[in-house]
Image (tube, rainbow, N blue to C red; front, side):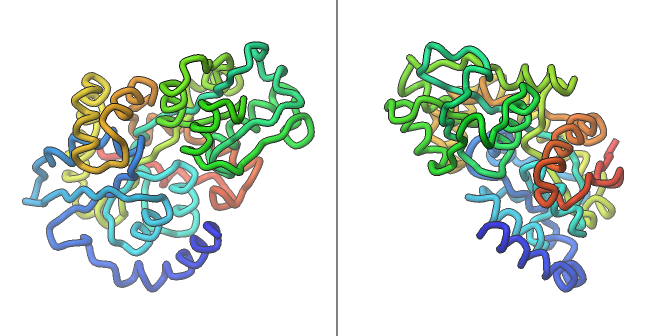
Length: 322
């Protein structure tokens, strides 16, 4: 159903982009942040929007789902937005006039279990593993790593997608399931509810060993072409403020957690505070992150080409505002 909705939205691109105004609101740059862990890094922009060149104002909006964010980006209602990396690539490949400005979140996916006998991927043969988010980064990451270890994810074990993130975390903590792959903050939720859970397989380390990349990008900041071309100085200032926000969040998790709850970014202060140290917030310019982005998108391309638009983005996808 999700892919059908996105396809319908993509069919409207020609008429939308031809008539879209320069800004969603006159003189205002509108930026969307997904509620949940993705939006945490932007929280200081919500609390203290930066001043921008040209008397422009910044409006920050917390968006409840990626579907809604995609619709707003396609419709030209947002001048900038944070999206999953593969979705940003898919929109660009479909002709949506956006560019990748920065990576704002790296790998934050954990394997958790209550089974003391598991210490490697090989120990998962014959097991059923809950993977919240079929077709999302945790799913493709796990499949890639299993295959690299000589394990067929379709026959040597069972990947279950029946539980959404919160329910999977609750079921794992309550002993109803024994194995799960979860992103933040849901792995933190499970660990707080059941300290006996452990993470014996470091998926990030396995990714680094397989690809040579330090991590894998999960969250991408994109900007509209018309904003990038008309107000590059404002975009550069916005990026600097976003980088400062991330650095502050990482250094002050307790204070950041309070702001996350204050601005209704989808998490209680205590959960956000606990999740921040495990959430791998970064700020890497598009040019700097290109190798890591292409490494991850290549996994999507090999497994499900349609998930990134059938091809790797061309070099113009990677914007520069130096």
